[in-house]
Image (cartoon, rainbow, N blue to C red; front, side, top):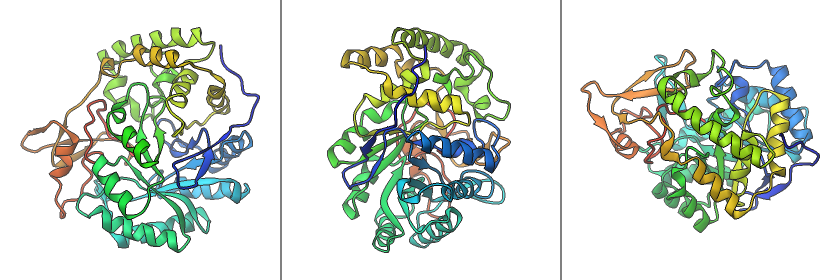
Length: 388
């Protein structure tokens, strides 16, 4: 049974710096293709306007989403049809592709400013509410990157600063230069590593958490479990969605579906409700290309859970039960997608295995700033690294 929507999405504080956003955000990356074929700008704008009409005002994009910055351009078109002062816009900078499709991370002050100016132009706005460093450049002191971001705040070009996939140490150092409003991390029922370090840190410092991939890249919406993945989906190459791993993970989905029925809602609604009940400072940003899924996602706000319910749901999907894990290896990036920028694996010419992402990042030199993995975090639950 699906919870239906008969109410507007409420507003919440994201962090303690004054930014107020809708309780549920909207991740725009999929509108330009990632888990599905990209939408036309007309179709994408229609979904964004529909989300806004239902109370979602927090929209998340990046300068690297879509071919030739397609996503920011699309969002810019949608913003022209919405009251700008009622929208909270988040975008990101810091990664780009070389001609041979290697991904480079750049956190130099000059690149920070160059990216911000370009995003403002593509989006057709005078300011950006929340501006994230998409991935941390470990060859540039975070203090230098933050110094330029601080200047952009003073100039009124951005209002708040965020970090995406940053380590505890990086967040602390960045926050000492200028208050961080939010960190964006992958967080869902089957990706919960941030509970050990990032969430406690953010609670201590008054930083909000924006959860990307809150439905496990569609898994808790039934993708691959009860319906086929689109041919264009990057998940067709993700080890959690293929072969024996998928068959084992389907058992988790069916167990979770039974639990959702108990709460008179759908599995994706329960997955979102679980996040919404974890703590007030977490804002999920599920994306979709379908109005019916948008309505269902909003319906998750009507699912009421007790403390014991949250505990039961957590125990029903132990993160170490999900199969399709990975080890990171060093030096060369081999793309495993027909769509550049979606996913990749990192391997070593000598076959030497690096067992943590921290080790992978620390091996990157200033001259070889290829993005190896998320910023110095131990992540054993994913086999590909996604730019979300």
